[in-house]
Each structure stands twice: as structure tokens, then as C-alpha cells.
Length: 135
Image (cartoon, rainbow, N blue to C red; front, side, top):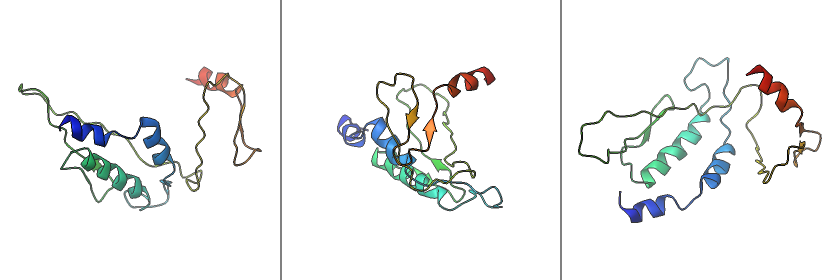
């Protein structure tokens, strides 16, 4: 990859990309016998594979099971092993993945976060300590 190719490929910030990804409905289905459990999970995979190709990873592809593969050539003449980065792309079947409206809370000061789409839904600051105790 040339520096020019990298500059074009990374014109979106990590935040831009993340906000785009979380809007894609990837809800899984626990009762499904297929892999992935829903076809809509492949929507994110198709986007990721295309973005990898746009970055110059020519072999980037999505397989029939919803896995994205790509090879980034080593930047050394030494013989080095390949490294795999792996992550799931589905979300819980317990909550819909439709119409996600991510909220960025800059300079968070530790208080409750009221979700703008539904003010009845509040992320309570006091629950974080209970979660920490379980870890």
C-alpha cells in the first residue's frame, strides 16, 4: 500500500466508522440452526470486506458463514507468522438491533445518561460500581 492509498482509505475517523457500524442491525437468533443465525449479520461483514478492499487488501472477502478474511502483507523481509484478528459481529437476540441511534457523551462527568430517543431509558451512573464488583 502506498501512503496515498492509506490516506484515501483512512479518511474516516475511527469514531466515524464505529458510528456507521453500530447502526447496522446484526441481531442474532438463538433458535436459528444457520451460521450466521440471521442473514442481516452479513450486512456488516459485507461493509467491512469492502472497506478492507478499499484500503488495498485485495483478497478481503466474506464467506458463506459470515466471516471476513483479509491478508495484510508483512512489512519485513523476515519470515514471520501470519496473525489473525477475530471478532464476532452479531448482537444479542435479547434486544433489537433496529434503529440504533448512538450517542457520543463527550467529557462525561459520571452522571446518569438519558437517551434522547426515549427519555424513559436512562443509563444510571450508580450501576457501574455494581458491575465493577462482579468483574
